[in-house]
Image (cartoon, rainbow, N blue to C red; front, top):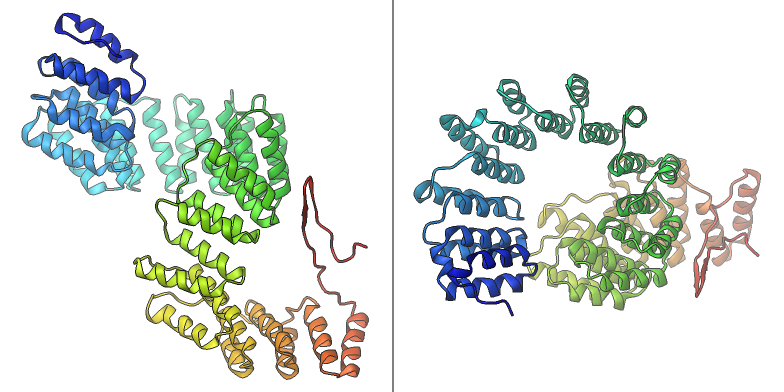
Length: 563
């Protein structure tokens, strides 16, 4: 138990406040302060308790309660609460608090304006920021260094870069933070040339300046310029290496990313996570999973983005065993299962054919957004549970969650697998009329598939003709119709779809195989042999298929040429 904090024991109480770690400790100290009247008689001690509470946004609500109990909160208490709200997920509360302060509180100081401007920057609300600027100008606070730097950052965050430049140019004092704030603003607005000019003019450049400029070049796709700056740095920290590796990863230049990763003098968790994400997003899921295993053996924890990428890698390989391992890792390390991570888990389970696992994750999410619902609907549709997919879609609409274009891909796919062409047509037409979503090529393909499977080939061909894009981009729609004709054994419809594919030169040889099989199935053996001979004479071959077989210790990926 925490001992009583009598007034005579004020130093002891302050020492306890300094040493308090958990929220439970603070609550015990607060109870003793209230019992012994120290809370109301010593504003400094109460302010210190408030400061400790608002260090974490999770305790901000309790901090507000403490503030409301204070009889005459001083400027330190007001600024402490302003700082907490400005750094929280809801910085608008800081602006409301300032309006209360202006009406009944003490006069603001330079720290007050710094926290307010941070809130405006987080909200991207330049109008309120300009009002704060006006108040600062009346009090002369705009000429002080810290508030001036906050003004530059606020205007830059709101993409008012001309105002950020004006504040910078007229500032009575500047430090490296001032220069970095404007540099970051130029880069945030995509003004790489202006940023480089400012970078070259800087009287001194810290490692933050170098890293920002390298990242700006990488974001703009100018990796050569980024690498030249990186190689010319007088000193580098882990962020420098990570920034350059991340730039190569975003540019899909995995070789250079791998080379830098191996050369790093000291790799941290961010370095490993960046490389894992690079492999997963760059089409090398096996390398991503191998690096994760190595990272685990070194007792390093990947960041949130890397875990999402790993789940994507498992989904692309249909590697359920590894996906479950990562799910257990998430639970064991108590990672917050938000909508993004939850959606990645749903997608992984669904693509690995484990609909039960996907449903369990979906039902366990505290909050769900359109992406989680879409992943679940699409997963059900892809795994032959079309009826349940459509039921879930109706539930989604009843909960007033607005579907997006990807949602309708799952819905139309569910209709197709159910064999309900009329329902598919109804949902397709409702996209634009009811939901304001313009159907895209993939939606046309789903409708063509549903109509083709139902034997309505002529209607499906009309839809394919109306598909958006050029003839070559619409080729996949004709390929879909050809596949539907194969399912129905419709030789005439298949011939028409195959001729359209051949007409745009988009075939991969697969259409010849399908048509030959169609002709053979309908007894037209001469035509089947003719198509096979055409393939042989023209050197046409179908792209090899492959399958992945998961076994306890390894995953084999044989293709159709393997014996």
